[in-house]
Image (cartoon, rainbow, N blue to C red; front, side, top):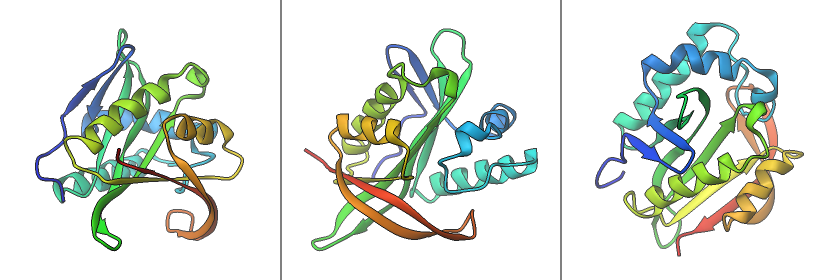
Length: 184
């Protein structure tokens, strides 16, 4: 749905973000297999490398269809994988129609509380609202994930309250808290 594709690489003061690719499968598998990382995600923790490969294939299919982009967060100096961030379900919706997306992210627990996700979120939103032309960005947060809620609120997202949706990856209905940010 975008008019021009997002950049392959984003750089912040402490991070280097690159678009997810097959070369990231092993590092992402180790990251997503961590129960602390997968605790709040709406899909099951990948138990085998093949499950992570399927996640990467799904992300690549979204990119090919221009309906999503996911970047891998790496430590800017060492290149160590720290997490991911990206937009999903990019489409026109609402009345009047406007381009919107859902943003999702995850970060390795050893780096929580250091402001890295806020840094990655700011860079992603700049691309989303600028180059991609997103007029609304939504985020769904599991109840109890107060760190994520604070990151969103500091980035100008408003809490709209709880929603229940079907999490296909979990095979069940799952309550989440909905946040939105309209482009300025």
